[in-house]
Length: 186
Image (cartoon, rainbow, N blue to C red; front, side, top):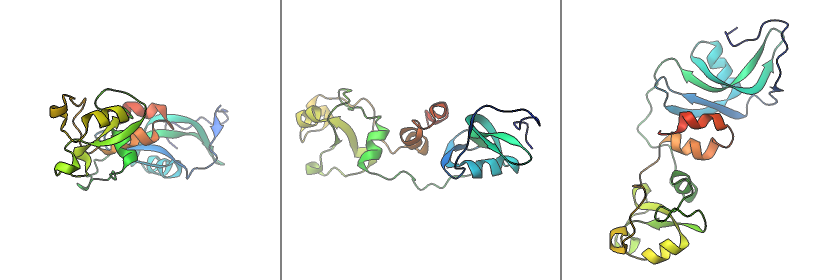
């Protein structure tokens, strides 16, 4: 049993976790860097074996014949795990929009979003993270086949490949609002 287990006989209010294999636990490295999202079953196993510690609990509970415990929402590994240098976030339209938080990188609009090449493809610009940004349709048409400097349209942020934290924030933050504090800035 862990320190988070409830004393015997105490009834805990909360939802009983229906599916422990549903991915809903954020796993952080020992340095608090987001590593990935795992199932509640795997997270509980890591905590029970002392490999990880619970940082935040969810509203779900899990019951066994001998204990009742809250399902963790965020866990942190006790030992640092080296991440491979290969970039895990796939380059596609949805992930570019997530990286740019669904905001035009020229004017800040949220409607009619498209992708824009900072250095236009007609001038040799490549289709990769550092050259593609989110743009609203009017800004994309106004910029045309010019660079942002030539069009007098400075970028709000410099495009770069997102980290897992940014990817996870865009994909999973609506599932667990408490994760936002751990995903920001990574």
